[in-house]
Amino acid sequence: MKREVRLTEKLLLAGFSFILIFMIVQDWVPLGSLNDVYAIAEDRTTGELITVTLVGFVQFLILTGVVLYFLGRRYPFLIKLWLIIHQMFIFVGALFAWWIPYFFGYGAAERVERYDQMFGNTHSFLPPMNGIVPNTLHTIFHFILFICILLTIYISITDSRKKKSTVVSLDR
Image (cartoon, rainbow, N blue to C red):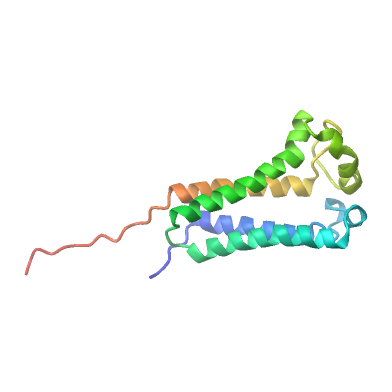
């Protein structure tokens, strides 16, 4: 059976690919002003960094693998549901870690010192609010994750493939 891969599926895979790369390099590879691997290494042990990297990477590796497996085919309902819910949980974690403290101040006091140490020397295009500012790299990650969620919802809703119409001949 020939698969018809939709543009939305290609975009979702591109988003997941970026996130996979982000998960690998964010804490390990110096990216100029986008990250500060030395400050992160001062805050976390090597074991913690490995654990955080593996947890994030493996999650998106599984998500990517599932999308690759069903690429161009109909996604089962439970797979659609899991793809959406899993990404939403990650996004909600990002909201609570970054955006709610940033915009509303809830939990910001506990994060100010640590975020300033780990991300204070990184690039950000947003103004500081409530003592913190999401850096550019995390902002891009969160934006792409949000786009991936929207793409997954779109793929799930529009997953009805062109059904091959069976032509029944009444001629004998």
